[in-house]
Amino acid sequence: MKKVAVLFGGDSSEKEVSIYTGLAVVEAIKDEYKVEAINIESDYLSLHNKLLDVDIVFIALHGGFGEDGRLQKYLDKHNIKYTGSGSVASQTAMDKNKTKLIAKAHKIPVLNWTIINNSSEIDKIRLKFPLIIKPNDGGSTIGLYFCKDINDFKINIKKSLKDTSVQMVEEYVKAREISVPILDGQVLPIIEIFPKGFLYDYESKYKSDGSNYQIPAKIKDSLSRKLANDALTIYQNINCRHYARIDFLVAGDKHYFLEINTLPGLTSTSLLPKSAFKIGLSYRDLVVKIIELS
Image (cartoon, rainbow, N blue to C red; front, side, top):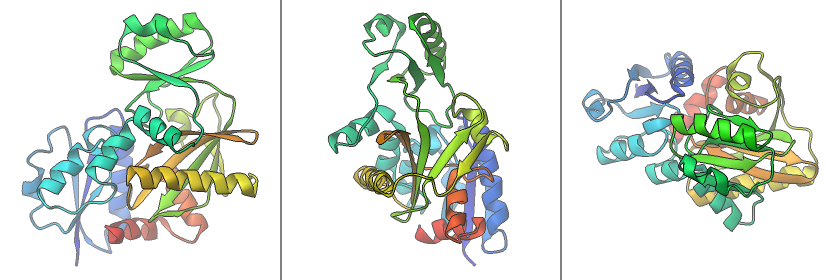
């Protein structure tokens, strides 16, 4: 029987989500494989000693070293197989600025944005209000701020820079939240998200009643094809593998790439399992498929 180590926890702001993902994965495959659950903190540099008899590592970490390529590089160094994208793709995908530049280079629409590294750059903003501030390397919409005017912006950018030193500032557009899951290079049913709150923030994502969903999304076939094609273009050009989720905004007939997530959540309220279920893949089947792809 194949032995699978499930890594979860970590030290990022998304630790709580990672624990939910990790425990759900362990529960799903405990009868299929020999499973070792490993809740790690910040030190992963001696991890290989615990993985000597492991066939594959299921990375259930979100954010931080678990998603930005550092852990993947470490596992590569020790010739340990793992789920999800490789180290270079993970590092690229974690950087929202880089991924937007890649999208723009392939003529995929993006909202106007800039990057701010310190408070001295605040007065250089040339974008139109309202604006959204978010960490350039964060996920789970943690640290998201809506700014209706310059006063809001000055207050919120100072708050955000205390949390992380590189912030993306993006023009806000009232639009539909759309997510495109990919599994093994194939687009799964597209999802529309209806957050209960003003923004699709952390609580909207992970509270059981935080959002409603439409799967497949009720959008024109022509727009669905564009979203699917653009999602695959980004996925392929970043050189992702196994699975990912690409998020867009849709306003009328226009769509805008937001970000790509190479280790999307796999909790009971997560989007990728909901989409996979629509094509007949149970949660267990989805997790097993990801492992077998690896």
